Amino acid sequence: MHSLQSLVVLVTLLVSAGCAEIQPLVLDEPIGPLTWKPDRSRGSLVVYTDTEASSLDPADYVPRSDYKLYTAGNEFLRTVNNRSRSSWRDPVTVDLPVGRYTVVARLSHFGRVSVPVVIQGGRTTVVDLTREVLSRATAANGDWVRLPNGQVIGSRSE
Image (cartoon, rainbow, N blue to C red; front, top):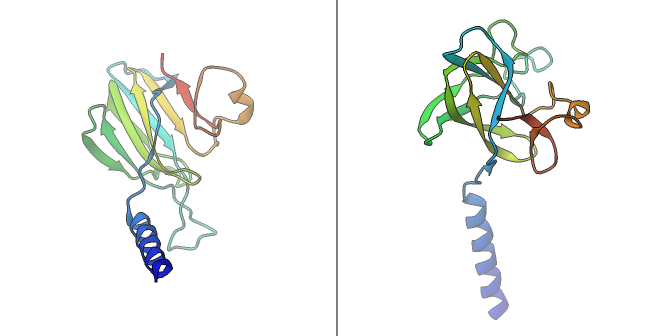
């Protein structure tokens, strides 16, 4: 009887743990701009997110997953539909006022990830969660923000 009670308690704990919301991986180090653009009062953000299955023909159309954008004070700004109009393979470029923000996105090996970013006037901040633009070769040089597994996801903010 005692083992049956222990089993019931264990199953209850496992079920309740499975229902709990999984918290995102939170990075503390902000990512800063990689490139320049002419307007210095605003900057831009490009986030390379994972692709997701589509209800359309998966061989032809695999859109990028959306991400959420927050102010540095954790105020929700919007969900970014990360599908560029020029090409469904390219992430969207978001123009933002200069400042600090937080990106929360789905990352295949970590679940959700929360990444602080810095937007500087006339510059573009790139967050690469997919290893598409910041290759392993690049990772050996420079000052980078990395995931716990060593993957480079962006340039360290100045």
